[in-house]
Length: 185
Image (tube, rainbow, N blue to C red; front, side, top):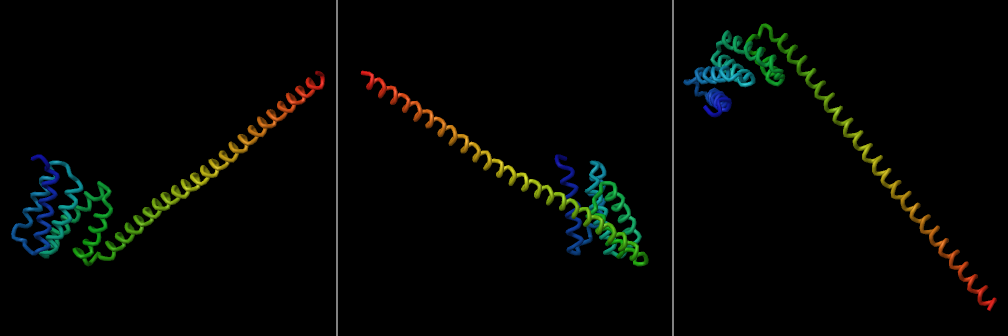
């Protein structure tokens, strides 16, 4: 009641673990229970997973008609929520369910896989470009910081040089004044 999405996921995973361990006496009812709960809470990703696994169960029991039916449901849901990873798995399973059209399913699989790889590379390239540009900006900032330090040092040195020149000149003038007054006396 508190966590229906989690409960549906656990039910789906339990049914799938039963399938993988050949304990199919409680199947497909657990899958249907998970799908009903996911449907009631509007969990499209969960319904996709459950339908896909239910199709795998029917393929395991050699009921290709029900397997194809549930694969179609899973494919529809996966397309609606743009779950491309699940869609790839579904297309791969379609080739086992419908061997006559295996080439068309594998072509669709390869086409989707290639487009996903291209999209992933483009995203990766964008991140690399951003990182490169960030590194360039950081290097430029460091160069500007060094230049600022250099100009600040030069300005401080010139100020000290001017101040020391002023002090020396004023001391000479005072010294000459005192000498002149001494000569006057």
